[in-house]
Amino acid sequence: MEWELLGIILTGLAALYLLVFHIPYSIPHPLAARQGRETRFDVLRGFAMVGIVLIHIHSYFQFFHPADQTVTRTTLFLSNLSRFSVPVFILTSAIFLRKKEGYWISKLKNLVLPYSLASCLGYLVKYNNYNILEFIQFYLLGKVFAPFYFVPLLIQFYILFYLFDKLLTNNLYSKSLLFISLLLNLTSNLGFFDSILPKEYHSISILNYIFFFVLGIYIGLSYEEKENTKKKDELSILFLALTVLFLFFLILYSFGYVVDFKNHHIVYPIFFFFGIWQILPRFNRKVSDWISYIGNNSLFIFLLHPFIIHMMHSVDPYSFGGPILGYIVTLVLNVGIPIIIAFTIQKGKFLYRLLHSDER
Image 1: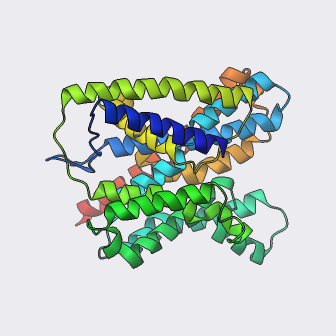
Image 2: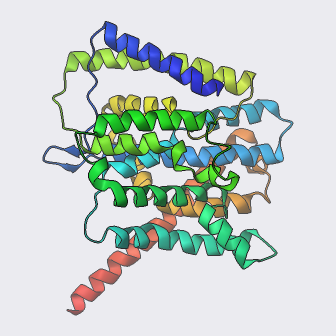
């Protein structure tokens, strides 16, 4: 709750700055003119995927070295810094969401089927006493591995969009829905629905993330605006000031109060999303391409990384060369191995299609 209130204060300061200096903010547009899909959304997903890995690396280091406070508080800082990840994934998933022919076929093929296979295999690998009822419960709630809760959560949003797409995509109601979803999300974060909703449902409650989903739809309906260089520079100053303030409080909470943040706070993910949107065009192109590639293959990393980190729990991270090198090696393995598998599968599909096209 303290972090949520801090976020509201930061938002108030940002709003005051925008009001005083009359700086209009241009909503990111999902389609770049004449260039098709805006690649910055893929870069954002790449950042989010790396962030999810960093969150779980903290748990890994804490498991082996809870007494080494310098290290665990540093990994906690990096974990807290990455708490924008799940909200940004939901937001970017909603931006391109459209109800069209094959809506559920694509969801079943590209999300539900890989998730089902990973859940079955994960249950066999992680647990000893197999129980079909327990597996069904874990599968529906995304509890086979900790990060798997994201899939049942996302599927609920897909169902919500399928049922109410005309309302959600109606420009007449878009701002009102955005405001209502903000109130619902904030109320949920402050725990007002905890006694009403079943305890098992809390982790996959759409109320915890509904604002990000509606905001994604709102962005998807937005129109591209002309850039104003002067205003863009003023926005950069604003984001720099807020970044410094944010980092100060993040360090205070991580190293001082040792608070482990939740994934569904409202302000920080939105601040990250819009802040990075301003910074991304200045990124090194090669770095952006790498992060974009991670974003494009995020499902592989998301589903395979829990297997890797689970198996690594039999190996002390310090055995890779100490805490710093151990952290880097852990990150590289958890992102790199799924990327290699994704690359191999994609190359295999390409060769298969090539061979079959030659036969014709």
